Length: 338
Image (tube, rainbow, N blue to C red; front, side, top):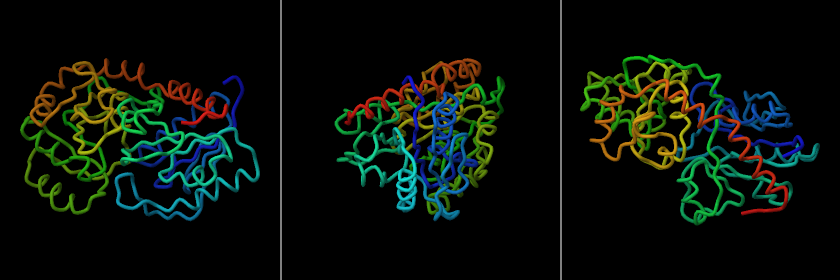
């Protein structure tokens, strides 16, 4: 795109953008917005109170400190978010809207008001037919609308993420504590591998946490249950490796990117777009069952942390994300839709 664009960026209202501590979608949006502004584009960010960016921010009133996250049973009502976008468009012109919200209320209510794209970062049900949807990995795109949608990998500000060439002695699983994140599998595998594991995350699935995760952590001497952290990058940097054991389709998780940026290799059960981030034997291992996960935990110490960092610089630069989305903006501004 040869000229600066006026871009409306609709974030989620689950957490502020950027979040404090955990918050994958909101942190990706923040990285993305900051790079767009750095490149000279005029960005208006719509988010819940506490959101901020280097462009203009519209803090949408009506949201309390309670939150629902992507795997929860209920989602926050997004009417106030849609109303804020409508009020902004009544005052000023935007070239394109980029919607990261979960319900996409405004763009579906007024599909012809302004060119738009919708980014989805979670598995979607059969029959999902959102107009102008963009997946976040090749594997994710293959599941949407017959595989006829584009995808753009997430990007982060890799050079400004501190890394360690040594790391620490313990494995870490950093994720929302819920059945679909598979903490019980990670704890069992670490015990079988004879490795120490820290389980870090906010409790989303309360019954799963109370009746599965907490009892297992109490019984297994190699496991520590540490709760949520506000220092995600530091926690990952100080780990021997990041462990992921998803029980759902991980489209393109941010936490594994953050780990690799910090020089920390990733061992994970195969799911979604994880194999588009992790190259076996180079920056971690993808396992296909629990015995493979056990083997990966034992072998991961042979992975070069410097190589993890080098690959992160090559693969996850946020400028790649901006370039690819600018191409999609051009297409919708020319009247194309998919």
